[in-house]
Image (cartoon, rainbow, N blue to C red; front, side, top):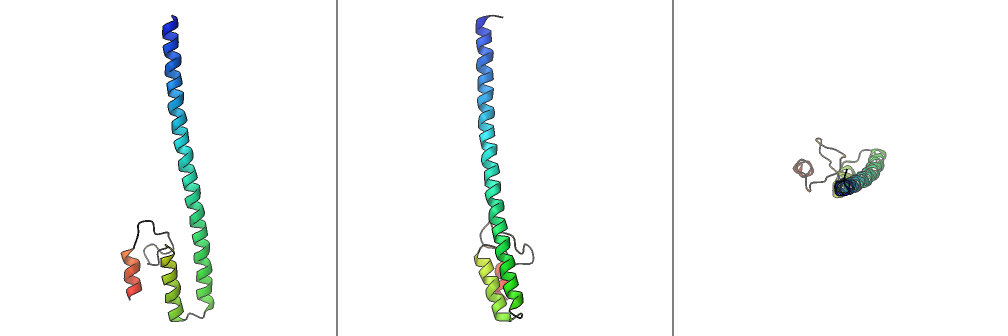
Length: 102
């Protein structure tokens, strides 16, 4: 094996390692994003449970229940029967808005 072909092999290996390093960095960032999103969802779920407990303990008063739903919606969560309690990631929800108008 001559020196030039050996050098070319080492250079190719170095390039592949660099590509793998970039891919690994990208995967690491995706994992961090998922961890952050999961934490936001956990916190949102805890807030929903707390609001639900407050609503249940209020004796089921109609006006206060609607106020709680409006607050939940304004905090970024669905209140419609389609996606209740999940985080609204795409802006306004027509189902939720329709529910609030009733």
